[in-house]
Image (cartoon, rainbow, N blue to C red; front, side, top):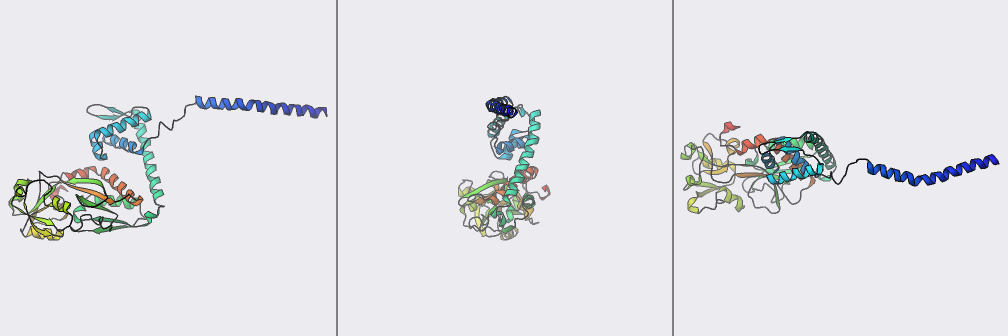
Length: 357
């Protein structure tokens, strides 16, 4: 019995000792946790928009070019990068009045950011693929004048990312410059602004010159470009549409000039085919995007840019809130637009010479 009691006393002491040591171990763990470096999640809670800003600037190494690609001001981009550097805690870029370069930390950060954004993109696409809206077809509207070189790579990229989404494309004539958005016949469309359509949201793709299309024997055909005063007294075609904003733009009534300083509005046409026939016959001239020299060429028609008017803005447009499917297409289009910057620059600088492309 004595031996048993001794063992009980030993066990009791161990138990008591354990109870006494438990608070000490807790204090020690707390001290070690405070002493060890660890990430501060408040400090690294970086918005993905800033990461995209950084990647774009790292690719361009030029604030003005990067800001143009991101459709933000240069000051806004500079502020975004400065805030990102403050959050990361180290300089990512070396800036001078003439150049921008990545620091060693910036190079390392860029590599990881690309990986993170790629993973985020893949995860987003995988999650969206489970959404009911991705089981529905995407109805895309366009017109002849919106089928430019940028459309094919956008559609190819979207099909590659979302192979299960059926795409339905529908072409529209001048009667509906919204390309089905106004009547809800389409979900998203490549359109030329300005148009009258309520609750419209747009993503600009590019701005190309407005041009005049004339018969090859017309006096303006020999000019490299034309100005508004050279068009005074000419007869120009007008689109058959109820959209007054669109009609005013393509008859040059958006310029704010008096009627006597503008060409006369002549025949009304409802399609590109009718427009080309009128110009070919010499009945009138037309105001059109410069890209018609490539997408609707005729040997008897010459296209010349109008030097003193605003260009024609091509946008990707939708009405109302962005559904997951619309957002997926928009994001794809913006990414392709940024990747195809050289092509966009050629579209915007076109002069009407088919050999440019």
